Length: 121
Image (cartoon, rainbow, N blue to C red; front, side, top):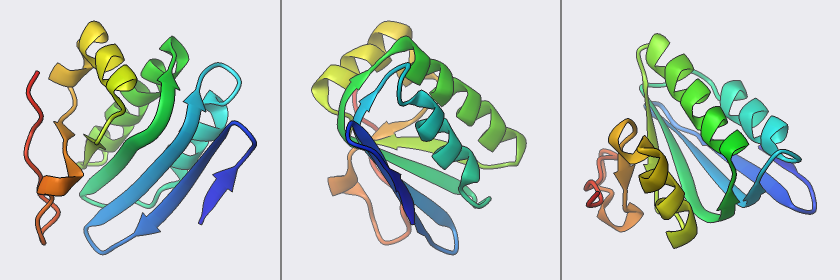
């Protein structure tokens, strides 16, 4: 399941406890609606895990979408977890302070239960 365009696409995988979302491309003013729509369409689970390893650029619009999704998921009793951000995206997360609000983890450290190690701030 997912959404696709030339510049950006999203893939969803739904488990019992975790929804995995893999975003690929650029998240900017032109693609942010597709990005947020995919995140908000994800079924409610305790964890919404967003793989950012394929995202090459995250604009202010993308940051706002992450914050809005975080608030929405938290209101449902869940947690939004960011996984493997590209170095450019990781810099944006640090510059905006979002890495202090949302857990940012490495997928290599993800265990069988879906837990992962926090990346250093």
